[in-house]
Length: 358
Ligand SMILES: Nc1ncnc2c1ncn2[C@@H]1O[C@H](COP(=O)(O)OP(=O)(O)OP(=O)(O)O)[C@@H](O)[C@H]1O
Image (cartoon, rainbow, N blue to C red):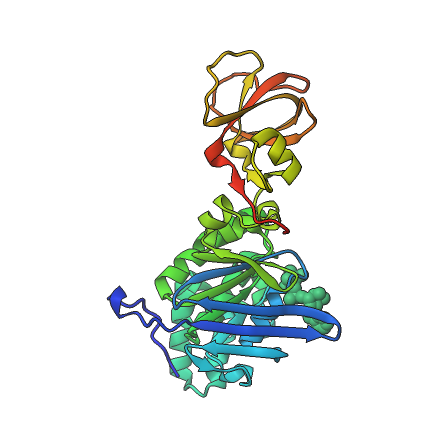
């Protein structure tokens, strides 16, 4: 079935059936539980990321959606249709792998057209559509080259063109930027996001890079040990991590265990405060204490220059380790130096309670 790739003109007319719906999804390999009872709905046209450390099960979820793995239990629905036992080529999804999997002996244009040949399209239609897909990823002028004659970023775009030419309803991307250096990776992130918006295709993106997930996604699922630990928008996940695990995995954070929370915050349970919420002042610089903030005396253990600011490692007078991020003001003010005594302040409102036991 060929599907339109243009975004619907009338948002109210958008089909509310999730593009992907997983229920009770489980996959075991011998004794290893790779995916453990996952329930998830991904909306049509959503940029959805699965984020987690190596071995947390995100790739296996992707492979279950693509049909490369058979579920041990549970169901996979695409556009409301149960495809749990359907072969990969019968599913309206396409996967872009980290290594791109391009054919080295074919031209770039033929690589992109290959899937259309498999689907039985005539030569002219194949070439036209492949050219159009190459134009979309801004490689229209390089169709005659071989993949080996392209840069890493260009090869990445060929892999994308090869996927979008088939106009799948869902594009699965397994660490597609993993092989690129940082600068190219950042550039491709922007391009991926733009492409997804233009095409209106549902993107499911697997990454272990939290910054990438925060930058690109409409929503993120944070995985650990085969389970979704938290599901939400980048802002929700970053500002209100549900557990110590999520707070620690997504960005740097200051974690306070229950005893420390009780002692310095005066509240029960585990808590977290993001480093950029901490404000530092030289010890003794007098400002009136405020009821809505926490103040701690600390000493600077180390200051790391980051270009855009400084990361300052601190130890409070009763031995709690903290990290603060200070934005550079562009002035020539000296940053805090090792051994300096400082006052650390943060608003009570910036203290995030974490669920216990995680
Ligand atoms: N074919 C397989 N045979 C046996 N065990 C497997 C197989 N595929 C995955 N696993 C195991 O399942 C668990 C989840 O693996 P998975 O590849 O889904 O994790 P991941 O989060 O995608 O990790 P990575 O980021 O390293 O790709 C791991 O413990 C892994 O070793």
